[in-house]
Length: 518
Image: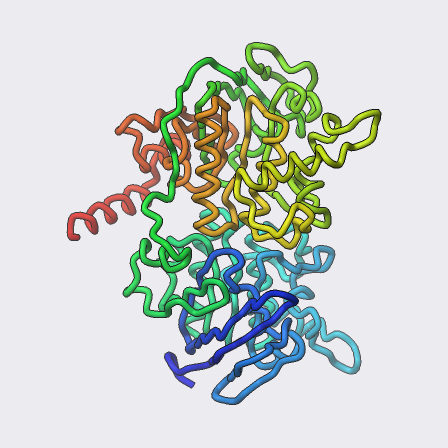
């Protein structure tokens, strides 16, 4: 088959779950050597469709064809044998094994009934070179960065002669450099006539990478066409079913007295001499490259991680102790970067997750007052529009956006004076992003002091009043976002330590020339 020929067709696919029609006649085709992005809000049916294509779920209706021949996979093993592989957001690396064994896991080259180590390591070296990875095949996989582990998953697909590789939110935990490496690898795969299905909530990536884009909503096809025929606004409107004229919700709030003050906070080898303040009604952003130390600063303020020197004051008073309990009692809430591992108990209900921090105040003589507990949870479920049948729904069954709202609600229930939100919209759809921004705006109007840590510069500029830039553990600037001179380039400059690289200058000049030509 040559590039552009149809590789896979999904025709009128139906998938039913108890009480839910997850896919309702979805049709989707994939061509050799193309990047085809699949877009839609959380809950739209993207994951279900992918699981049908990869043999995780059996369809309840419709047809699935590869090279024009109908297939009906009953397992992922059958899908992989047919050339269909998926790299999921949650990586499946065997951390204790070396890179070579991870590449060929379940498919080890054998000789005389034993593993052929010579072939294993020579073939692994070839694949690593193909992926532009300058590491030994004998490196322990658990010692690699997330980006490198993701490349190993892609390499695993190549060892199985994949013709289609599905990538689910592949850049959600990657640095800018790792993202660029991934894009280069995708280009090389496409040049080898391998098809890519790309799933991401980062629409700038979708618009940059895609040849074609398909949007599904509520389990149905909405639109499918070439990338060049879409505008980003049109893409968003098709995803959420309405126009989203203002994604970044930030209404004016009265900014008054200083609520949080951090003085000369230092953790040796992590961050150094960090000082800033946040006032009532103010939203302060923290921006920097991955690994700059932003999250570590927040964890130290909240008392999760230790620091060597410095001081944290709330409403003019030093925190009594350096631990989360003291921070919570003083009035600091902290929505962590990893909501699934640190922010939520996924096997528990919305009710229990929301009220965990507040349980001492909902109890009498050590017994939880269940009527008060449910009343409080119902109130917040309604006020911040959590979409679920009831507060008894398991949090693990919610979409990413609704999970994030539960995390926010948990901290709002304690009525904090300061709310820290670290990567508040990572991995959630554009409609849920706008709702989260609206919640933060409302809280600022109510006089709460808010810190937003984000890797998305547009998010920082859209929802914050000012931004602190961090580079290699040091504060490099605190910029007023109401000042017109605070541009995207200015923020990036300070996030890079205050100096533009030569390549940055070249990229900036190229972008300016493109804008002038338009």
